[in-house]
Each structure stands twice: as C-alpha cells, then as structure tokens.
Amino acid sequence: MASLDAGLARVLTLSAVTREQYVQRSKEKALALLRDGRIGEAVASMMMDMRKHPDCGVPHEIHAIGIFAAEVGDVALARAYIDGFN
Image 1 (spheres, helix red, strand yellow):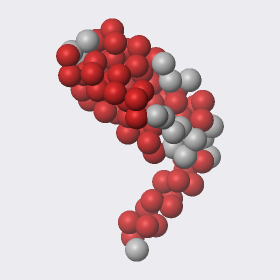
Image 2 (cartoon, helix red, strand yellow):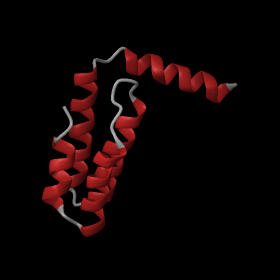
Image 3 (cartoon, helix red, strand yellow):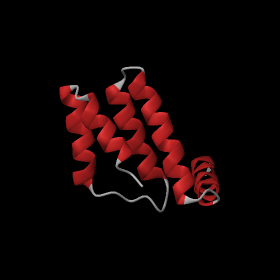
C-alpha cells in the first residue's frame, strides 16, 4: 500500500508542474550529466524523466536514438537527443 501511496503522490506532484517546466528541468539535469562526461547516465536520466510525467509520452524509436548515442559515445548525438524534447 505504501508504494501505491508514493506513486500517487508522485503523479500528483508531477501534475502540478507544467509539461514545459518539467521537460526543461529534465533537459537541464541530463545536460549537466552530459557535461560531466556521463553520456549513458544523461540519456538514461532523460528517458526515465520522460516516462514519469503523464504528458510526456515518447515513442520507443526516439529513445533508440539516445541509446545508440550512449552506446557509441557520441556526445553530439546525445545532446541532440536531449535537446530535441520540447
């Protein structure tokens, strides 16, 4: 029951933030990780954040771009993946 309550609290909190604010904060966090050279973590952060907010559904094909960028260590492509969210 506690995990259900925590999940509900998270959804209510996310709903209080506009989609644009949420995406901007997610991008800032992911780009900070990318600046630190943590490509995989930056991509994973963005992917997970986009899954958390009820209004940020993203097709799996889009995430494949980020996964590929992390796999091959392409910082420019990872940045384009992160910056591509609006």
